[in-house]
Structures are given as structure tokens and as C-alpha cells.
Image: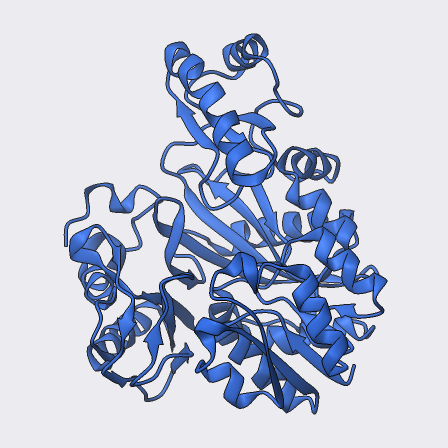
Length: 445
């Protein structure tokens, strides 16, 4: 692997460029017309415009990405997260053009992208799964019968879904009748696939994910768990590792289950398996993310392993350099997503020009960002402008360090979610580690 094209933008593009530089690999940045002045275009060895501002005419167009790779002579593509990162057809196109896709195989993406198929595979691997339908449910009468067997409440999920779309909760039969077809229509509109399946709904669980690395040669390890329970509308806002509810025994069980699941498909690259954990510490497979995730830095901070470098090595055909016995965790890490949104106005997006930008520093503080003073945040993409990650000897120190870092973080000219994160860090429930996915239901700024 000599030259990597990064098929993404923002902080993740910078993250990949930095890892490539340290490994002596040349880089190509792609950008839309709206991202002409974005930082990743400055730090890459080469840059090339791939289209107009709208993602469908640039970052989401596989043909433009492949053409850019061919023109610049890139022999590999890193998709980052979002956009085409979990697009099996794109991974296939890369291989057809003799370009290494830095991620799992197209077959692995497809098998885990279809949530019903993924659940079936996990059951075969002896990974605990939520009670529910064996596969897709096409008729309302079947939905009613399945729900009678597993009991209310249930959740109807799009098989090709993600980000909370195509999901409907039913607390009784009337709600099931009302929501079943609505979920199918929403799934079809959002993903071009109206297939849905049904699961028992775990009320206010903990959302725990396990970071994985596989080499596609039979070797898989995990890098511990992350707690992603602080969410708004199924979108994660704060992540930490280790989870305050996971003890050593549960960590071993979660890690073992995740590794079994990844080995079932001979997984290649970085990925995560996500679980729902109830108050009795029973856990159930939810989904697998076949990509690097936004919150990967917290796992890097406690394991001291560069996940993006490992992605690059594995994609080059190398075996994993570690066994599970080589992995040791130290301290506690927390990540807050700094979004260009107004938390006092229902998190309304706040694009525009940043007039002043000062990032925090000091021991145990990391900021992943593409923003700077004078940068204009376009309205076309995700509103995240930075990730603030801190590390401490223990959770109390990590929280104190996050509070201090948030105080130092100055962004003017736009609204950000910094005040929201400051309030969460002061919340007694959060500080005591007594929270779940329902944390924000009664949270007041």
C-alpha cells in the first residue's frame, strides 16, 4: 500500500491522514465544492475536487470516488465512517478496480448490514440475542402472533436501518397495528428496503459496544467496551470506556461474545458489536458496525493502540500484531461530541463562520477537529465539528478533566453543544454512573 485516498471529510479525514503519514504512506484528500478550504485538503499530499456541495453529488457518489483514485494513482481507499463506509457495492467496486478497500469484505458488510441476517448469524455463533422474530416479518398477522409469544413492549426495526430510522415501539396491540406499516414505509423511504423484524423492547437499557480488530485470517481481538448510553434520538452524544456498569466478569463475557460473533464471519478490520444490557446485566446483540466509529478514540486512550494504523496494516495483508493476552487497559477515557448545534433551541443546527476557536490542552486531553478560526461550517453535512477526549487515572479524574477542558474550549460565531456537555458532567446521576439510554428523558439544561 503506497497511496491512500480518504473518501471522507472533516476530522476523520485528518485522523486517517495522520496515521498514513506516520506509516510513510502517501495520501489523497477528496473534497466537495463546500469543503474547498477544509483542513484535510491542506495536510494531504494531494487533493482533488469530486463534485458539488451536496453529498449525493460528491462524497456519496462511488463513481466519483473511484475516478479520483484512478486519476491520482491511489492503490487503496479508506472510507472513514458514514458516507460509503458500510456500502458493500462500493467495497466491491474498489476490488474490481484493483483498489484495496480499507475495511471488511463486501460480503461481511452485507451480512451485518442486514440486521435480520446478522441476528441469525449471531445466534449460530452462540451470541445472546434479543427475543424476537426469526427473520423478516412481512404480514401484520405474523407480527401480532410473534408479539403475543414474546410479550409487549416490542420494537419494530428496519433490517437495513441505522441512526434510529425505521424504528417504532409498540406497547400494545393497537400501537403494533398502527406502527407496523409506518415502520415499513419509513424503512423503504430511508433505505430503499422496507423489510422489518421485531424484537422484545428492553426499556431504558445500557448501550454497550465492544471494539474489535480482526485480520481476516482467523484472528480477532477486542479492546474492551464503551458505554454509549447518553443519546438523543438514538444519536450518541457522550461515550466512555470502561463502562461504569461493567465489572471484570461482565467485561469478559461481553468481549468473548463479540469475538465469537466477529470470528463467525472471519472479520477483517476495525469494527464493533453493540449490545443492550439490562439492569440484571443480561446482554443482547443489537448490531455490528463494520467500520471505524466516531468514538474509537476512547478505546485508543485506554489501550494505547492506534486503531487506524491497525486498519491500514490489516488491509495490507498483515496479521494482527497482538493476541488478547497482549491487551491491557489503563485508566478511564470520556469523549464528548462538540456539534454546531444550539442545545437551548432543541439542538437546532448552527452552521456559519467560526470567528474564534481555542482548543483545550494539558495532560490527558485530545481534540480531534477539522475546524479553525475563520472556518465556515457548511449546512450540508453532519454538525459535528470536534471530538473532545480526555483520559484520567480513574473515572472521577476523567470527569474533572473533561469539566476543565470544556471550560477551556472556546468557539465563537456559532452555537455549540459545549454548555450541554458541561451540564451533563455536573449531573449527579452521570457522576455516580447511574444512567441508561433514558438519561435525557428528564434532563434539563
